[in-house]
Image (tube, rainbow, N blue to C red):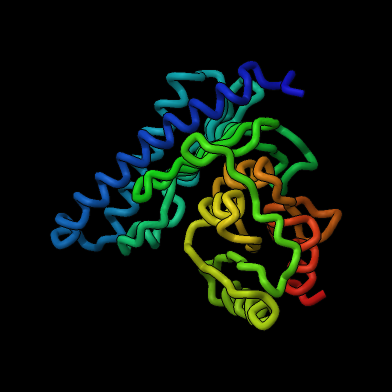
Amino acid sequence: MHHDVDAAPRTLARLAADIAVQTGELIATLRDRGVTVAASKSSAVDIVTEADREAERLIVSALRAARPADGVLGEEGTGIAGTSAVTWVVDPIDGTVNYLYGIPAFAVSIAATVRDAHAFADGRRAVAGAVFNPRTGELFEAWEGGGSRLNGSPISASGKTELATALVGTGFGYTAERRAEQAEMASRLLPLARDIRRIGSAALDLCNVAAGRLDAYYEMGLNPWDYAAGVLIAREAGAALLGRDDSTPPGEPFLFAGDAGLVRELRAVVLGG
């Protein structure tokens, strides 16, 4: 099963977790320091941008030191091809608006992926991953075939099958057109579900599905670094993952996560099918 990866997925997950924790501590420190220097900067957004870049530099240098042959794809522009089967897909700060506002729901997401034409929209499949929220100290991690863990303890999805009592997570894009479309989807769902949560970090939403804190989650327009680690953590915790339709892999344009029965019903409602 793992012939295309030269290290055991468990070893890769350990590396992802170690680097995620180290990076999480860095971004928390930068944020606390940023509060004091924001007044002298042109804007607090500058501090967020700089923290993103500095965090990505730390992740890339740590990965390169540990596994120099691997590729790296990062939200902040890192694109290293690599010569091994593994490409690390990383988001230094997922939930940057929360980070900017001081809301304690942001995370570092790091995943080791291999090529798999059918797995996800970007043609890759995560074999190991970690998501760390430095404000709560919560470390989610998973490796292929090994289940999912939160701070070392196994977690599992809720298994809820009824939409009427399901708590559903989602997120919204940045353009007005995209938001209008997403508002329509949410308005179709609101009368039929228990409630909707918009926490502001796709990585944490997927981890919350894995931990049973959300019964399901859906989003349109995600990038690979938003979901690479989170989808593995959700799947290893027992969640099903679907795309827009059965011939489209999850990711872009759509990703749905939750109990296999529930998530089909959710998809039909959200897409107006």
